[in-house]
Image (cartoon, rainbow, N blue to C red):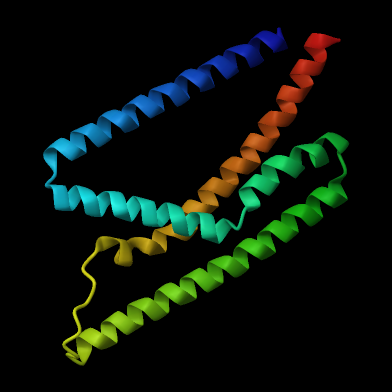
Length: 164
């Protein structure tokens, strides 16, 4: 009975992922048709900039979580899991702090350049002003990696019970 539930859950997740891809594709088509090319280009560049900064903030911790946490969960060693999560938290908090400091310095520089009428052309691109979202994007990616590693452990148990 439990195996059927897991198979149905996997199928639902697969269908949901496929539908999400279709919706994303259709929304991109709709936006590219209804926005001016400049606005659509700015939107796309902003999304790409947020994705790049998210990858830099994570420093590969999302991949490390998916690779190592299921092994620790299978061993059920709470001490190693606690140390792993603590290490992950320290690394992420330091990169968040660095990222937010850089963004604050960037905004202060832009404000001071504007306040003193330096005559320097300030960037009008929206990605400069919306990059503060990147740490939250990184956090959501990392949390989804934690959830995925837990699902991998439950999938391992399901495969073990089916095959034995």
